[in-house]
Length: 447
Image (cartoon, rainbow, N blue to C red; front, side, top):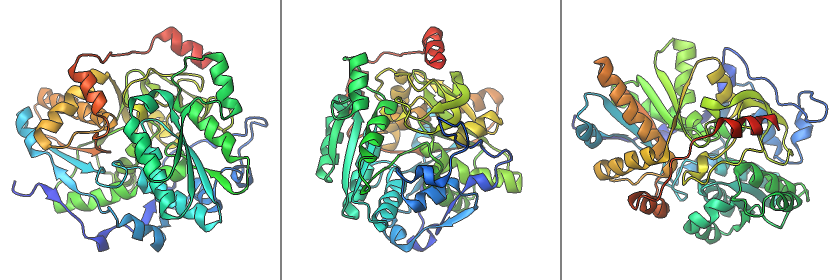
């Protein structure tokens, strides 16, 4: 085919976010107050989140309008391109058609500004002066730092310690946008001190960093907490990805048989997949949705569906999700954005209902796939995105074994231009494939 890149104009950009809760055949179970075990109410979330974000979190409305101010900020980098990976197809000698939605062409280099901008906007409108947050590999912290700068807000980031030292340029990016960044666990919070007392050599986890960010947020009425994945309103904001992609697939006169995305907390996966699932629910469209997760943190493939805390210290409501246990501390793989103990409530319910699939992948396979993609398509993918690419290669082999030609769509959630140490470690044979021992999982879940 002659066309490789499918572009939308600004006036084709979606004006509403899609809320999958309205169409889900089985609605998700409610978050519970950890003390009373009763469903939480909006007022219980007010110490943490802006009022409008709370409304979105609890909403069952199918479409939620994107304010013009947010649309204007989106237009700094959206709409993003859909690209036919024709060179990768040639290298694989496959009849399958492979497309990727590229979310790396923005100030943070990942899909994260799609929710960072709305969260900063709604907090700013409410008079909030500062946002605290956690970050794993640093994409989310970078995005929120940029978004806060757009609205004249302060930003304080607790970065998982393992990633803080693996990815120094991410810290510099956040500092450049005006954010303060601290390795987590830290001595700045009681939660951090508790973690360090238990394990002074801890490399941290997203659950620990969330605890620290929440503890700092509740100390003042002028500070709120901001989360980069997992929660309903975060996934809602990301659906602009899939809505654009549906229009671009129409331009390509094609439709996916398989949709693939990496899954840490769920925002990248939901952003691409949820708008397509609307067509499965309402138009009976047929396709597979596949989440790719790390073998060292396999909550979807080895975790348990249960109520659990979203953070390690137990500050959050109890969430019904696939989890490895909120005390679980994953290995320090380079895909820091996927090192989270639980999956979002919405993604968990969809997996429980058999509407999505999940596969766990070792990191050496991911970097092998990412290297092939870089050689063929010219973009060095983030380690998180490389999980999706590795799964795409597996789907190509599956199609070959079935004797079928398929259209495969995946979310290239970001570039890896500040992840060069990860690629260096892979090239020098330093990466270890870390699985999850059953006894470790049992211990974490028991707690």
